[in-house]
Length: 365
Image 1 (cartoon, one colour):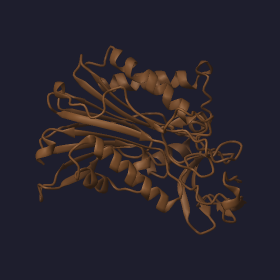
Image 2 (cartoon, helix red, strand yellow; image 1 turned 45 degrees about the vertical axis):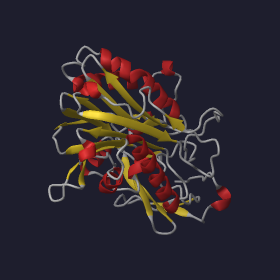
Image 3 (tube, one colour; image 1 turned 120 degrees about the vertical axis):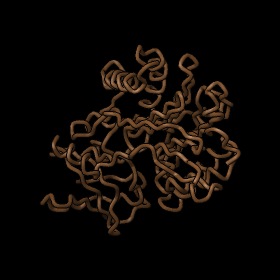
Image 4 (cartoon, one colour; image 1 turned 60 degrees about the vertical axis):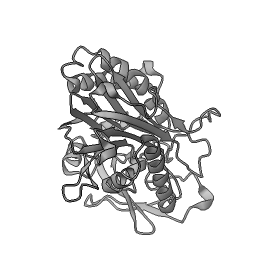
């Protein structure tokens, strides 16, 4: 198995990939240095991080169509304010990098629902994947015949439809080695309806029973990583393999998904939308659903891509968010802190997307 780096003059010498317990001999790889957390390795053996033509009008941020930080009194005061930001990352070996993340924050007045969503694109055309899905999903979801009575069913069917179209020839988007995570939360009638595919995440901050001045973090979705027992079982049953790239300094990268007969695509998650080659190796696009009743103790809801979660725990994020009483400051400070930690650890920065929603009487907490 061989890799090529995108910053050749800066790489340390040598890295090797190993598959534990597979009986395969280790192979010498070309250097890949600190690019350890990229999400996929593609067929031409390049680590891809959104190489597209530079859009000079793109400042690296994408905002939803709703007004950031707006008060949402029509949602029965369950969520009274929310805001989101998506910031382009940094890669010194790719000065034409584009932001592959998107977020959605859309209200449906007919059902008195708020639809929040984060997608983290990856691969050479990951930005086109997320842009297409952002354009298609909200309108189809709100128009679905089951949306008002069974939002989970409606969402599952809409995601299946848009992914099928995305992977079809008519989309004009090559999803062989490109795709996205999908994480959403629908707020309706005092409940949270969460759905997840990949490793973006939803986390809730609730009043600490021992200290009412603090919030306790609870992740509402589980990250889909290839080494989770049930995820790995499905991948292996489909003929895929799961192992991490081992580097010359003895540190392993994240577990990745590989075809049984070829060292591609190297996807660092077990579920995603798109990624047609990875799906041949057992990666799934099935959403995982969860539901939660909102209580008076629940104060802060956060959806984010792994640009936030990679170097910050759920509790650290909630503790930091609790230090601010407005959504705009919260999202900007969280993104900045995440960026700082990426630079300390990797000397690259992942695209980072964060949505913060304030629940109930947050300011009184």
